[in-house]
Structure formats: C-alpha cells, structure tokens
Length: 196
Image (cartoon, rainbow, N blue to C red; front, side):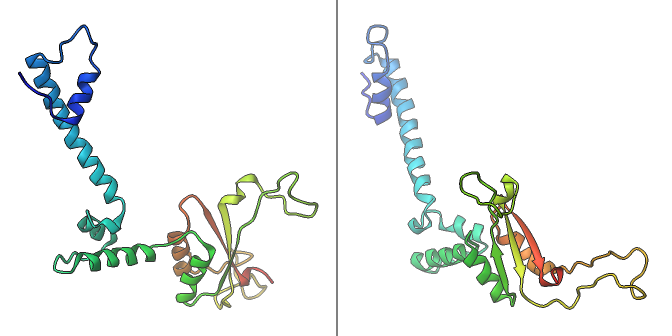
C-alpha cells in the first residue's frame, strides 16, 4: 500500500468523488503522490519567487545586480550588495515633480513643471483654460535658462525657407526628460525664448 505524504497529494485525493475512486488504490495513490510532490515543489518555488520581488531578501541578488547594470562581486557581504542595488534603484527615477526638477538642476538646468488639468464641470470655473480631457497625461516644462540659439525670422537677415519663428531645442535636456518621465505621459518643453 502506498501512502500519500505530500500536502498537495492529500488535497488531490480529497477532490476525488467518494464512490467512484478508491484513494487507497495502489496506482491511484502512487499517481496522487507523484503529482502532489510536483505541486509541492512548484509551490515552494513560487514562494521563493514572491520573496525575489523584494531586493532586501537577497535571494536573487545576482539577477538584481545584472538588471541594474552593476558588476556582480560575490566577495562583498550580502548586505553591501543589497545596499548597492537599492541605491541604484533609487537613482533610476521617480514620478514626482521634485525629483525631475532636482535631476535637471544637477545637470545645470533651471526648470519649472506644471500640470494642466482638464476642464471639469462642477469643479472648473469661468476663465479656466478649456483643455482636452487627455491633457492630464501631459506636463509642461518651462526652461528658465536663457537661450542663445533662439532665432526669429527677420527681414534682411533671414532667408527664404527659414522658419518664421525659430525654435530652440536642447537635446540633452529633452532626452533627460524623456528618460525620467512616466511612460504613459507626454512632455511639452517650452523655452523662455518661445515667449516674449
């Protein structure tokens, strides 16, 4: 007689119809034990993966270091490796206006971020801007740094084919904003040279 020792094997045996199957039958009990052990193994592995989501457990520290672009050094204590990964994750970005402003400031840019709100009946008032409802996924970045490369179309200076209103662009700042912004949002960069 085969005994069912696995937790999931016993649970599977409890699911059998009481009259149709004899859970004490040799082949059925053997099948339940084999399947139960496999489910026990999968359950244990799933619990390990749940712990792996939290970097502070250190279970998959090698994978965390690889994903963060850190050089794995197994000679370092586990606590140090965990602290390195957490520090790197903290550098990767945030969704706050303060964080984005601080990152730009560290690169020498003075920016102000504003978030327009759609016009909502009952909340908005007369005189408020009539934005489209999807404007909530857009934010404006006003660059405070003076721009030297800003050019307007001027008679006797500009040529045919030049834009009527030049547009200064800073590819470094704009790529930074694209990198740190939330994935679902749009950035509209406005330079002081655009407004006179």
